[in-house]
Amino acid sequence: ADRFEFQTRDLQNAITTRINLYEQLLWSGAALMNASTEVTREDFRLFVSTLTIDLHWPGIQGFGFSRWVP
Image 1 (cartoon, rainbow, N blue to C red):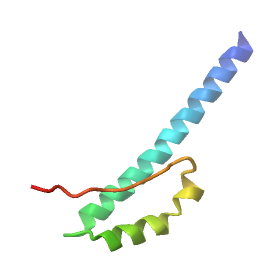
Image 2 (image 1 turned 90 degrees about the horizontal axis):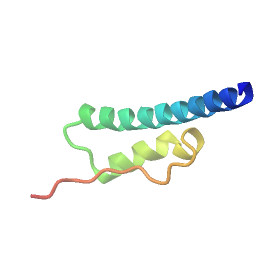
Image 3 (image 1 turned 30 degrees about the horizontal axis):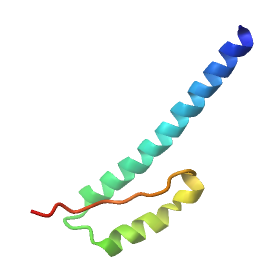
């Protein structure tokens, strides 16, 4: 029972840590959008390349934004 409890807590901590890391990435994207009146594709490409997502957020397969088209 103790081993199961430990493994459960360990897994819960791993999931919480991963979600917090993903949340940081999303907040950084929101900050970029809020800091500029217009974000171009090149701006966003530079932003994402600077983040080095593969090093800091392993497992993320993509990070992007889309424009609303009326």
